[in-house]
Amino acid sequence: LLTACGVSPGASGGTAAPAAAGVLNETQKPAGDFEISVTLSGGSGRASLESPARVRTENGVYFLRLVWSSPNYDYMLVDGERYDRINSEGNSVFEIPVSSFEAPLSVTADTTAMGTPHEIDYTISFEDASSGAGGDGKKQDSGEGVSGKEEIDLSLLPEKSGSMELSFADQFSVDYYGEDYALISVEGTGQTLLVKDGAEVPTGWDETVPAVKAPVSNIYLAASSSMDYFRVLGALDKVKMTSTAAADWRLPEIKEAVESGAIEYAGKYSAPDYERLLSMDCNLAVESTMIFHSPEVKEQLLRLGIPVLTEHTSYEAHPLGRVEWIKLYGLIAGKEREAESFFDEQVSSVEALLRESQKEKKDAPVAAFFYVTSDGAVNVRKKGDYIVKMIELSGGKYFLPGEEKEDENALSSVNLQMEEFYASGRDADILIYSSTIDGGVKSLEELYEKSGLFKDFKAVKEGRVFCTDKSFFQQSTSAAAQILELNSVFSGTAGEEELSFLHPVR
Image (cartoon, rainbow, N blue to C red; front, side, top):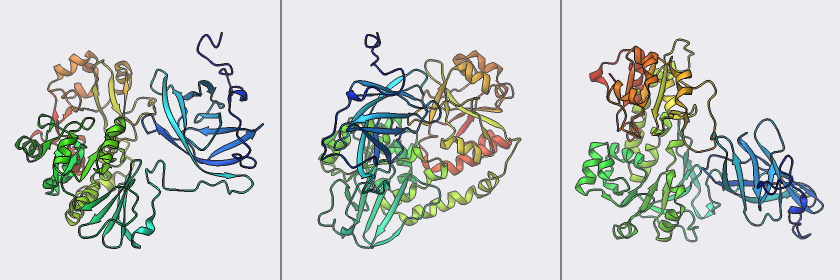
């Protein structure tokens, strides 16, 4: 009966019978139980596994104990066999058989985090097994895995001379080697070596870490949020191609550049015009994490000799961490001093608010930042998102439903049913509608068309409804100014003519 329903025997609890697993050769087996480093790829990239993972042997069979970063996984599929979680509380734990650690293991895991169950395909890779007899059981850091760093021979570079000083950003780092080399590491995506013009790429350098001459020119910028950094640095001449058409730009200076041909549209990130990139001597492609959905594009770019740097600003929890990426782009464009100066000015402008944010404020106004999806759900920001931090720094308190939903995707937001949003958010002091997806709302009537429930919201009754400007998210360097504007809205001191990023909805 279980088989007929698509459930393997043993699926009601524990693991399936060990007979389903392969038995390792004696030459493959470490002596006794051991630990092994594991890395997870696939899915959204947000889920992870505890590493090192414990391995026990029973009758010549390896059983790998996997501890996930989420409590929402209920079963795993390995070679067609189903294995249920072995714990009832906390993050999901499984024990699965593994026939070999020499090759990556393809698995499927079912998560209930997104409301309805979803089976997601993952790949588990292994390295650095240490047996109970001879190893110390500790994970050996090869620089590979969640950090995205490759295992490279740094002895090919001069002696390390320092690192870029960062105050808020934690999604990238830069290490300097001598005077001519800078190794960029972007969390979760990989590394890039910048080679100062006049210096040479070290002989024997591993091509898996792209080497780019700096300052970099002829850039294909497929990450639209990165364009603003080049704009404020006065380095738009370094960008020759974009994946965003002129009609989709909200920054006038960029829109004009694309319309005039100073920056050419070279196809979407998922389908770039490779011939154009080659004909324009593209030296670097700057991609957003959307490239993970089209890995074949990145592979083709690298195959054509075009280095790829994947930006990770959307994972910065602090809004000033996003702004601090200007230091990285300043390094790439040869505008380090300009980048340092700009960032220091931004931090200085909100220094007082940064200090105030450390104090607990019981009477802080509650703000909801949201938009209504095409199917009537309400999309709200997760508590770890930078928008939430921006609201808190501005003197507000972010609205969250009674029990925030958790999921394992890499998105910074989650959808709520309108009734759920109404029940928890109707008493919010301020509503901020995000215009990014549907263009926003220009009037309360337009808001009511999305749901008549909005008429009962406190913020609507008190006339404290705002909508973001369409350029809100394309102005990556404006976080400090946005914080100041939000502060004026929360404190009630904002005049309508003074608003640049928000507009009142009447």
